[in-house]
Length: 174
Image (cartoon, rainbow, N blue to C red; front, top):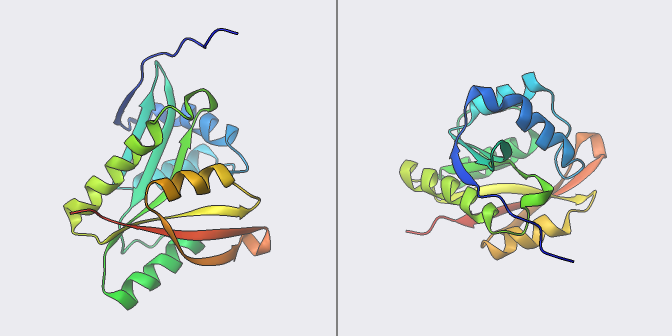
């Protein structure tokens, strides 16, 4: 079988016109990420200082990263916020990274994370933080994050016990 023809892609800033297509990309990745309505995703975008989109002719992936100090009520963001307060450090929290299935395994994920690490350096943050589902399991994401230098700093049950996540941190290189 011949290799699929890969379209060129670029990582670019988010545009409001991307929203509907990113909702579709997001929801196609369930259960790795939660199903999210357009208003909910728009709210996450507004909270984020890192908003990058993979575009292969149409939006086909994205990363949203958030600084500390928001009134965001995500259980995972709250965990990391408390941890950062105890340590006296700043962070960039990656709330969501999603790629369309046809783009996975092509080295695009690390390029998206480059934007999160660049923002962390810009604000003087010590770490980039995220979580990965353990229940339901997401071993591909866990391996991906380990390759980028993320290590587990905690676990928690979320969504009323429906999920268990590994809470991950990676130091920001100088």
